[in-house]
Length: 175
Image (tube, rainbow, N blue to C red; front, side):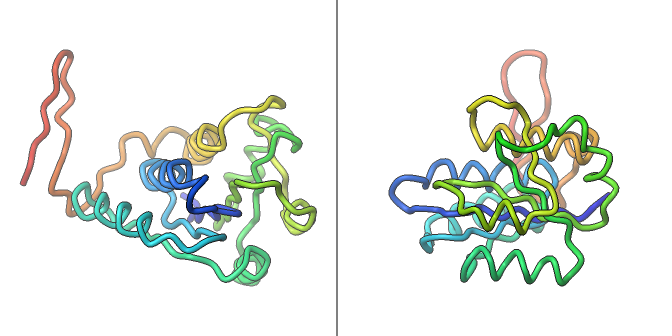
């Protein structure tokens, strides 16, 4: 399984709080090890996602970046393959083999208008569809393709809360 880190590009506290929070939740639930948030520092996201991890388990990490470019260059030096999710990119389904065979992957998920440098520094610019849609959906689909669905059955160590699947109703088990 590859090690995946997500870079949330261009977070703006007032405008992007919910979307960035949901990017964090999707990254965590769908198998990424970490998310790095570039843009305005937002302690409420850090607190919220840390609380989720403490209750629901796992070792997911949230960090803030000192600039997207510095972060991308640093991860490239560490051997990460950089995948930028954009509706203008190459088809995910045609490039997924190339992506999922990499040992370490940095997935960039945009927020505000993306600078041309992001397209240039990325190893691949990938489109989940060639239509406007949610970056959260693009991240979920991409992670699912990278991990081949195995992340959907992942067990989170240290969980204080677990859902017991049921045909009807809901059952939450607390430790």
